[in-house]
Structures are given as C-alpha cells and as structure tokens.
Length: 367
Ligand SMILES: *Cc1c(COP(=O)(O)O)cnc(C)c1O
Image (cartoon, rainbow, N blue to C red; front, top):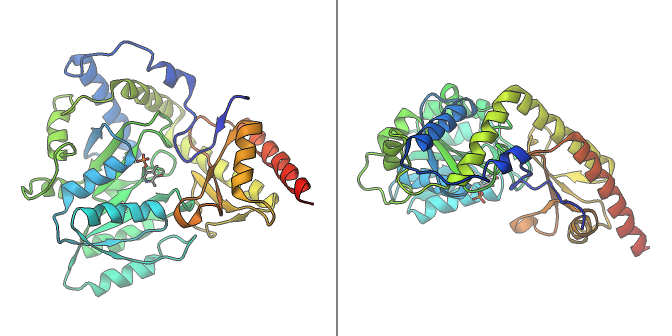
C-alpha cells in the first residue's frame, strides 16, 4: 500500500510540523498558556475572516459552527431565504428548518453560482421585510461552485436581513472581507483550507449579530455564543476544548501567515485551475459553470465509459490517490478533487499520472 495522497474536500493533508504540534502533553484549559494560545489563534483568524469583530472557537466540525449561527441568531417562525448551490447550502437550510424557521429557497441551476440579479429581485420583492435572514455558501464543496460574495453584498445590505455565510471550504483559500462587505455571521472549520485536523469550528459575528445573541427566547446550550464570547474574553472556552487540535491549528495559522494570505489565494486558485485543465484534457466535463469555479474543489463528470466508482476505487487501492465522489443526487456521477491542505505541485502531477493510468486500465478491460 503506497502512502496515500488525499485530495479530498476535507479532511486534507496536514503538514508534518502541524501534526507534530499535537504530540505534546496537554495543558490546563483554564490556565495562562491556553489563554495566550486562544488569543493568538483569534488574532490570526481576524484577517482571514476580514473582521475586527468577535470570533468564537467551538469544539465541533464545521456543521456545528453552522448550527451555532442559526441557533443563536433566529427564533422559530422567522422567515429565512436560503440560496443553496449544492448540498451544503441545503444542509444550512435544513438546520434552519429544524430550528423552526420558515425557509424559502432561491433556486439556482446546477453548476451555477447565485445570480446577483435573481437575489436582488427576490429581496426587492420583499418590500415589507418579512425575510429576516439570508443563508449563503461562500464556496459550495459538493458542486465546486464559488459565489461572488463581494457582488452579492450590496443588495443584501440594502435589504437589511441578517446574513449568514458558510465559508467552511472558502476561508483561507479565497479572499473574504466580512466587515467591508457587511456580512453578519460567518462559519469555518479547521480541516479545510486552514490545513489542520478536524475538530474546531470558528465563527465570526458582526455587531448586529451580537445584539441578537441577547434574545432570551433562543434555544441553545452547548453552542451558546454569548457564553462562548464571555469566556473568550478571559482566554477560555465554556467547555473543555479540543486542546490538541488547537495546538495544531495554532501552528497551521502561524505557517499560513508566514507564507502570506495572498500567496495562499494564488496557490489555491493556481492549483484549482491546473486541476480543471488537466481533467478536461483527460475528457472530463466540469460541473461548475465558467465564472463560478471554486478555488478549493473541482467537481467533474468522467468521460463516457468511465464510472466514478471504479475509478475512485482503482485510484485509492492501486495508486494511493484519494479523491472524492458526489453527494446526494450527484453520487455515482461525479468525482471531486480538493486542492486544500499541504499539497505540492508535484503531488498534483503524481495524481494526474495515476488518473491517466487508471483510466487506461479501466477502458482497456471494457473493449
Ligand atoms: C466541509 C464543509 C462543511 C462542514 O462539514 P463538517 O463535516 O461538519 O466539518 C460545511 N460546509 C461546507 C461548504 C463544507 O465544505
């Protein structure tokens, strides 16, 4: 079994120094060393979110961060506009529905990003402001589609609804300017572009969002963000945090900033562009439309005669190359190639040599 190269849209390959950061004794999560680390992590996250506002660190995967936003910002019966461009967008809507919100959907064709004109038209029609919240996905991992968050921002601000953003697979890889664009609540997680192990969600809140935390009618406990922020101010988390994962995240963020955010944006965009052109060269068809491509995950239909299942199995078992398949209605139809994490250009080369060889193997058997 060769060493595995992971090109999943999370979890991702984690650099050895980040992995080694976890190989140390645990510390008191109510002590000064932890407080210093938490402060360092939050300071490092500010430019990644593009905010000077509050950031809370939660012990959970990204979905917990999304749930925390919904649970802390809306009460049952509020009307939300969901703008899914894939299954993570639908998950966000599902969370809101399970908290008793009335969720309306702005439909977008498969492979496209949210159309700013369509969003503007829907918000414009809501002249009596019945919609109190809007759910958006910065980067949709299931379809390899990125939304133009800068272009959507002005119409959202003009309407005034509270805007929630799932940027679990976007932040760190693509620019996000939360304060400047005026988004209210943004969630991300440790195991995607920040290139750390899974287990930590991070959420940032605007002043408007913070004001909503005071609502006593909210149903929440573990994910009570008011409590999370109160503890954050004294260098702690309300509950026992995943200390070892935070050791890793601390080192990952230091490495991230040492290389520079701009370099990270360019690397992700460059890798995703390379993956798209190589897949097309091998006969794949991209799922995402031109102008809507993600910088962190490429979703594509294999050429005729190649099924995703056997292709993914051959790559994993014979070449140690781990790609992902489709989710929900795209299961068995597409492959997804993630470019986040400790990926080198030579790893991409290795992956494409394997894909080409596996394709040959699978088609020669058929004839
Ligand atoms: C990975 C991901 C999530 C969260 O998934 P978890 O498994 O809960 O960490 C949410 N949204 C998007 C867009 C993602 O890529």
